[in-house]
Length: 120
Image (cartoon, rainbow, N blue to C red; front, top):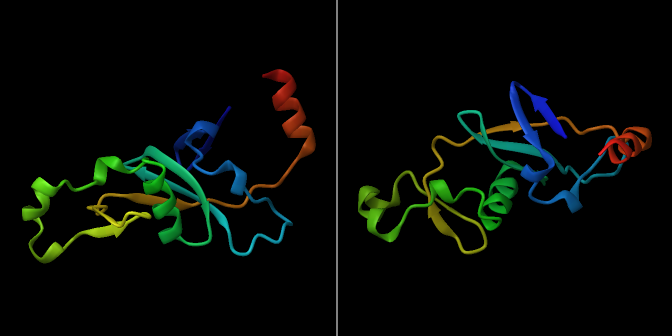
């Protein structure tokens, strides 16, 4: 199945941490879905309580490798200016072109889920 939001289409395969999904009416502790993209090309959908945590989760899931700065390229960043150190390994990334959209929290529907699984 596909979803479309702000002219960007994504699927369940884009979701990094589906076990952390939240739905309307739940006590979600501020967790919400974040769509990370590069000029509209979907990189990841992540459930997190803030953008920084969403980016770190995506990095740890190897979804933002295109932005990683190699040791050979570190010279292009004097004083590490323009770099963000992300993920559990705190590796250098240049995420200047990374886009994001805070998605609305979806409603849970047993009927919709049942229909989707029956029609799959």
